[in-house]
Structures are given as C-alpha cells and as structure tokens.
Length: 330
Image (cartoon, rainbow, N blue to C red; front, side):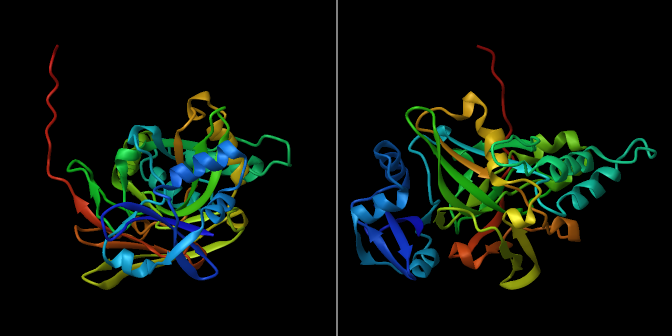
C-alpha cells in the first residue's frame, strides 16, 4: 500500500491510498499523521486503519502531480515537531566521492586514509550486526525540521550564500513517536537530500553547514518494509531535456549498514523519542551529479524515480535572494 497527501478540488487536505494499481480517497482522512496516531494508539497496522476507514472516489495521481496539488506524504501541524535527519557513508561505493573530495584538501599527504574512508570501513566491518546485537554507529547529521521540507513538485530553494545546489537521491524512513515514546515506522519514501557539496569540499568539518538546506520526499509513502534491492534513476532536466542521469541503488543488499542498525543509533537518544513527533530519516546515497562535474542552475529539475515507490519525485532548483540578518540586543 502507498499513501499520498493532497489538496482536493475544494482546497481541503485529503489522503489517498494506492493498492492493486488503483488509487482512491481514504474516507474521512485529512492527514497521514492522524492515521498513524490512531494506528499506534489502537495497536493496529497503518494499513489496517486505512482499510477500516474505507476507500472512496478514485484518484488520478498523475493529474494531482501535474496540477501541483500533492503534499509531502507526512507532515506535522507544528513543523518544529518534524525532524529531518540522515546518515552518510552507508552505501557500498558511497565513500569514493567523499574520499576524493577530502583528499583534495588533505594537509598530510602521508595519511593513508581519510576520516571518511575510515568511517566507511567501520560500516563495512560492523554495520550489519547479528540479530539482537548492536553494530557500529554511522555518520549522522541534522538537516532541519518541517519548515525545511518542500512539497513534491515545488521548487527547492537554496540560500543566497550557498556555493552549490545539488541533489542526493535517497530513501527516507518515516516514523511517528507514540505516547509512550515508542518509535513506529510508517514506511519509506523517495527523498532528495538536497545539499551544498562545494561547501562540504572546502573541509569535511563543514558537513554540518552543507546539510542545513531544504529537502523534499515522496510523493508516495510506501507502507511496510523496505525492499532489499532498490534500483532507481536520478536525473537532471534543463529546459526539458536530460542534462545528466545515473542509476542509484539502495536497500540492504546495496548498503554497509542494516536499516535496523541505522534506526537504533538514531532513536537511542531520548531527544528523538518525544511523543507525537515525526521523524524523516534519510539513509544516504552513492550517486551524485556533483561527482560528475554538474553545476545546477535555477530552473533545472531534479527527477528521482524507482518503480517500487510509485510516482517520481520532481523538484526544480531555486535560489533565494540575499536576506541579511540583523542581530539586536535586548
């Protein structure tokens, strides 16, 4: 089952469910958040709650996308209670680009391994522990909150001070925190973990700055487990033509960590188990147009697609005007 959130023809919020190739309105549902909260409270699966609500009128997902009526597949009424975070160096091959960036600025040529490669090797050796055991912790970063989420189909803005506006095609895990602090996984979605790779390349300690950008995920929430093999395509369109495209891989068959291990090292912090919060956690990528020398321009369109996740995730590139900040003494 896949879920979407959208605005209906009256401008009101609604939820759609796709199963067996057909998409229908979920009766009486205004948000996936409310469905998740009910499922957690009643001890039911998200799918069971949707089926119980009932499915109504048929929907045309492609038309909703064309008309710009799709919303992120989950959100929070208070955007500050939606966390966007991620992990890096989690995929087979994901260290090569990062390692190359950091070696270009390596101060000590005799150093055999960059910190990135060391971290990647730690994942290879200890990122897939036996059931019941805890593996090595991954690289982790904070990306923002609900205020930094761009809806599918809408432009992703880059701040005027950014040096780069580059895509990162990833899989995002979506979670709801229950009343007793239990994290409930709702499912997975395509994600564009939009980043500033030029800033990151200056020094790897700027990684935190490079990640504080808008992002997008969806349009569909795939309910249930993540397929072991995810094989999609990431591309950039300029003036309607393909400027760049490359396959991307995810799923545990293509990762150096298990999903369970990545989840453990995120939710082991009490901070991330606050009742009612939503978490969108990006699991990393090994595919970047930046690695192939691509520099995006305003109006370019990112397109990330994988058949197992339904509609492609499309967002244009935009740049904000300079907005000087004045600090005032009280």
